[in-house]
Amino acid sequence: AQTVTQSQPEMSVQEAETVTLSCTYDTSESDYYLFWYKQPPSRQMILVIRQEAYKQQNATENRFSVNFQKAAKSFSLKISDSQLGDAAMYFCAYRSAYGYGGSQGNLIFGKGTKLSVKP
Amino acid sequence: DGGITQSPKYLFRKEGQNVTLSCEQNLNHDAMYWYRQDPGQGLRLIYYSQIVNDFQKGDIAEGYSVSREKKESFPLTVTSAQKNPTAFYLCASSIGWDTQYFGPGTRLTVL
Image 1 (cartoon, rainbow over the protein chains, first blue to last red):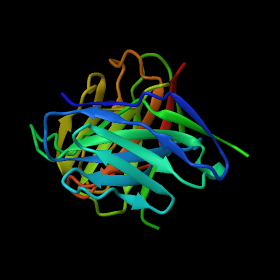
Image 2 (cartoon, rainbow over the protein chains, first blue to last red):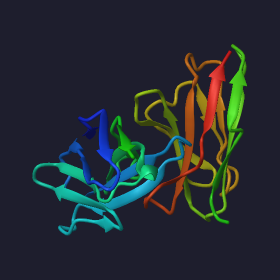
Image 3 (spheres, chains in turn brown, purple):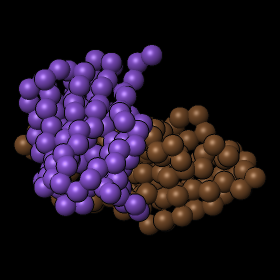
């Protein structure tokens, strides 16, 4: 079974600085998708960025970018020019590209990293 | 505005009661999902549905039931058989197996 591990329960960054959140995963599959979701105090899960495993190029979305290392099974999120609104829980998630019993679309989540942004 | 709505935002249940959480989407998504979130934990899948009138159990389906009579709606019933229902519940939807988008959630508390 696939697992997702976020080893940093909490992180802190100064406003306007850069911070990197770590995520590792375990899978025997070769094709899959990886996601970072943000959960602010309102608790709604918001998609930050998505990466397809077959793409070597790292995904970027404005100030958010990933470092995807497939061989190392690592998927870190870099937030540049941190803003106060970036303060939230961040969840890394894995989704298989294959269907087993109809479970292809199911997301497997890590336990999250709480990011604080200091003014 | 297209999106996913969940109601109510807060729900209180007495011991032994069944309660139903609502999830509606107007994104024309085929698939819908229910997740449970406990403090300090990621999300765990309760049920999912890829098409109308069909749904599958997720990792923690015991004590829950769902229906999918309409494409837009996927209500979740928390039954009295669920021993520890106090949690935050999130509904999501997607086009097929593509990226999932989430609703604002319902906080359920057992009194």
